[in-house]
Length: 239
Image (cartoon, rainbow, N blue to C red; front, side):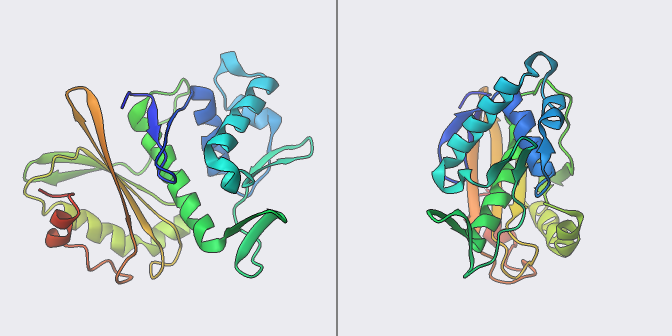
């Protein structure tokens, strides 16, 4: 996997993302549910690419990457700008932008969590032209050395809801006697720890190449007490 190749955690495909696409997608995710004007999106793009036609092309590529099933989550609002929908319209448990496109509330939540995790993963594969730094970086110490941990939450409320679980995960990782992974990324699909799917991405550099592994876990309990040293060895986080 090359340094600019991203792994799509939704459909297990690869995508080479440009700095323009990165900046547009990051702004939409950070302002979910809010219409961002064309001018606001242009200002967030690299200076040399601040053209409406480049912005339009980048959004079309992002929508293509999300596939038809999910592309309608990004909507063009008249001549105002674009919005990444934040909350689905709850009608029989589905979100529909047209009679032919629908997505369940559960799948929508998982999709948002995976997009957030993808945004964090981007920092590991290329340095964007704009000066952006990943947030919530933790340096964990295990018996085999240190690793970087990046929990990604969609809001302060969600981060607070998972305060105990996040600390428990950190403490469990630090019990590893041996781990080959140098970076761990985590996101969740719901504000409720009782039913939030956990997405974990593991990354390591071997011989100049990036090795990746992704996990999706349905929690056995809301406190994540199932996460212990034995479980970490079973899923391949600890050796």
